[in-house]
Structures are given as structure tokens and as C-alpha cells.
Length: 127
Image 1 (tube, helix red, strand yellow):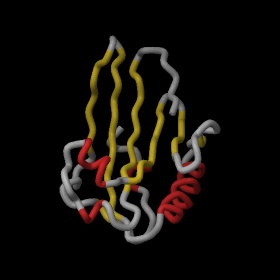
Image 2 (cartoon, rainbow, N blue to C red; image 1 turned 90 degrees about the horizontal axis):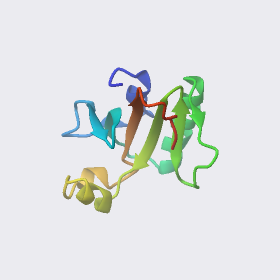
Image 3 (cartoon, one colour; image 1 turned 135 degrees about the vertical axis):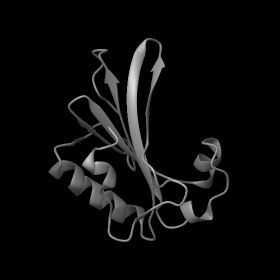
């Protein structure tokens, strides 16, 4: 999962966030299902609309399908047995995830790109 090219795709001007230089990857088991995951976090001085435009284009070009049931403002895609989300960061989300106050991640349109896949469970990828 950590080697997926799409995790390194980013709009011009986006940089890997300080403290998030390595791809966050691993696996976990919950209720008998095994899930592998990977993610990157970026800082971006532009707008959420610019990030959205970049990923909608890049994801389709890479064979990912947008979730037709996604709510406005949500970015989720599926490909084979994988799901991928683009999540814009807020001070509240950072605190909830244990990253404290990070002004560099709450200005502009900082965001994370995360993907996961259920292993040998027969569960289809979904958002």
C-alpha cells in the first residue's frame, strides 16, 4: 500500500508536512477482518478546490472511481479492493488524532491522503 504512486501525487506547491515525512502504513485486525493501510499528509498554501481538482483528475487517470454516494466536499475513490480518501485537516481533527496544535496544517488546504484494503475477507472496497 505504501508504494502506491497516488500517495505521492500532489498539486504544485503541496509539500509533505513536517513530522509526516514517512508514509504512515501498517495493518490492523478488527472483528476478524485484516486491513492494510497507508497515508500521507501534505501542507498546501492554496484552496481546497485546487486540491479537489488535482485529485479528481489524477485519480481517474490512475483508474480510481469516484464514490457516487459521497457527500458534497467528500473525496473518496475506489479501485479493485482499495478505497482512498482525501481529508482536509482542521485543528479539531488534528487534536482528535493526537497531533496537537499545528498551525502549518490548519492554514491553506492542508490534507491527508489515506487508502486501505481488507485482506482475504471478501469485503468490497467502499467509502
